[in-house]
Image (cartoon, rainbow over the protein chains, first blue to last red):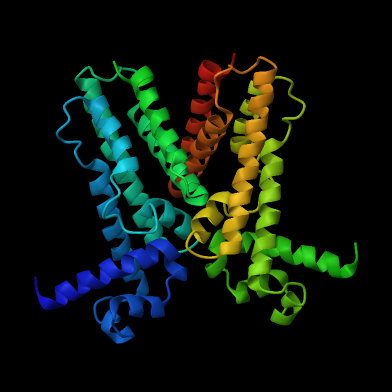
Length: 196
Length: 196
């Protein structure tokens, strides 16, 4: 990696928690300078604008979140068990996540009346997560592991909204209970209504 | 109502959509001035600080949301049907809501690493909503309408997280589908697992 690229990546990594915690408007130049140890010119030598930096910081935070959420799923043979692993990962695999909570939840709420580039990023991120879950459900149907009448889009939507909503509550209540409950609920639902 | 009180209320009503859409940091003085038609001094004659105005704007937005969500529930005799009405209200009763989406979701995400006054407001708002649902569940248990082994706190948490998560998705996807799906899911759950 060239020195310029390494610096660029380091800026993204250090800016990501600030944008994730404070949002696009709330992330101040002074905080970004403090976190990166660079002057304004040092930061903006590598990025066209605050928007570009925020967009790449989101990509970085989301990539990390997706890696954690999908970790260990490829090895699992059965599709329903694979879905259950994703649900468990939401609760358990949080090491190395960008601080500040789920980047999708943050950016969805932060950008909906604000930055259109970030909104498009969040929308695509959501589509990606739903798509991964959907394809697991579809392959489960093909293999006879998932009931034939299950709508994969509906199931993916339900899983993601239940988990993301519980992340919001967990954040306010500073308690693990809402997320644990959401996970148990989905696991039960998968066993009772989805598994063939 | 005294003229000063009327002006104060009008400022709150006009500021509420701005704070709800943009968040505490994102709501600029110039937008607040434009919306209220007042100069800075005219606004801050009535409020100690931006924080105080934002807090009262949240209270106003949340009061409106709670009125809509609980509308028509008192008249319903059966507790499970009452819960189903709350769920339906989330989807259907949106007239007169402060623009910008659910104030609880917005403020929870916006304030968690930011303003502690707003965070406390959101936390109390969530507790209030959960408490209302819980008390319906408890009275349902007393009246034999809800199964005896239902944990009212767990059920309230599950309902709120599923609905709020779907509001986040609805916002990104600009589609009614996630919320409609969440509502159907909860209604089914109430019939199958909660109704005695």
